[in-house]
Image 1 (tube, one colour):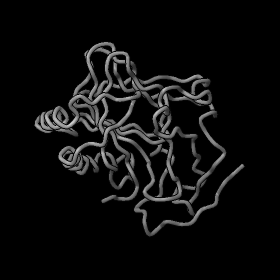
Image 2: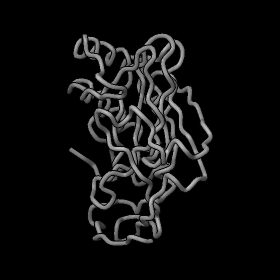
Image 3: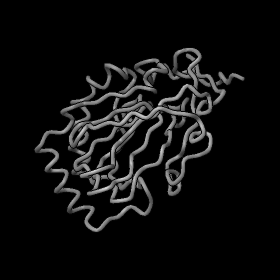
Image 4: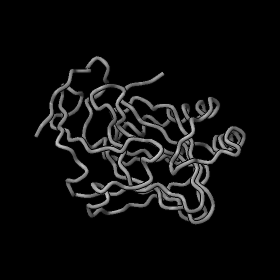
Length: 233
């Protein structure tokens, strides 16, 4: 079964999207400077004092002062990100989250929201300002199983390379990350752990399976956002 409907968006796109971009993993080792990390810690100590996520991976919209720091960092990082994800034009608004002892993010798949309508979420990017003393590690999982994939194929009329497949996706919401759905938990997968550290951004394609291991000691403090194919104000 193939689904090739859609209208061209060529005037709004700088690149035709390739499947490899949606499956990419890219790090930016100096995404945040030590001074920027310190500033962001102070901002969130003030703005998020007493805030606790109501569910795993709940995201709090970052305040304007933090948005400015992260927007500047994103602009600096775009050349590095675009080497492997050339369709990326910018990022969305940043969110902030924390993970305490016993909390993690179960394996999930963001997917490409509104795949035919810009701005498309081609990837995600996250950066910690404090890592847990033990646990709380970001990971990706790979599999050759067909279960994560739908029957949809996108094409040039949709803004993609011909015959670009589309995965299922898990919408973000109060219960979205509490359990891994059967179609994602059943396939055999291989796990790849990252050890990026504070200030190092991890950019990953929207069709990458990923999660965060439970925190065993300490706390993770992290900012996350979408990487999109159309610059947003």
